[in-house]
Length: 268
Image (cartoon, rainbow, N blue to C red; front, side, top):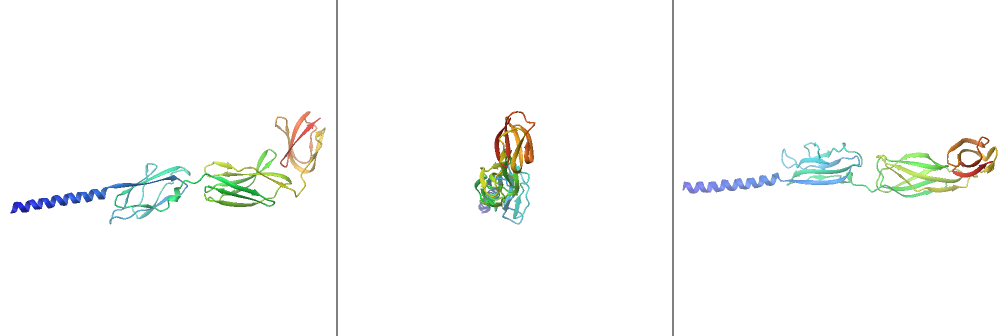
């Protein structure tokens, strides 16, 4: 009888050990939660379920294969500040198989659309442009073509949304033809140019000059800023005024640049 009892006791203990081992093995299984994207300067915020009095779901976190420390709490952010803006990022969360951690703001590392100018329009008083794919802390440079050089008229900060953004900027045009463009500079140093857009202002009369075959002096219809280039494009004169003293120029062809215009003249 004692042998029979001992046998059943052995069977019971064996079943208990096997069952306990199965449960323990199941509890110790680990799974991985993987999320990929681009770092935009914002950390990921994670929900970390508690599975016992002293145990939490998440066991390890890796950012680009680098181990990241995290607090033992039900919610925390994954510190990714060691990354550079626009770095590609792979976050791996190792957790107990019986629970499921949750990333609360996966959009924080969403790969954004490339930047683009959707449209640009200019009227008598304003410039209006629409963009998509901006990044935070970017800037716009509003430029106007002055002779052969682009001059920055104004700098403004961008709104930073990768969705559609609309901007309106007051403008005061020069007389005659004005050529504008926009330069977008993002936080990484990458820049984009808009197409050139022209606007002809009929308010004040456009500046003219004479003669085109000059001995000593060129005269403008009103005082203006000018540059004189030789036939090879080298700057030989510049200034501001009503006249240009050409008496020391060598004989030949030159280019006169003023208020966005480029005109050829001859020194005789």
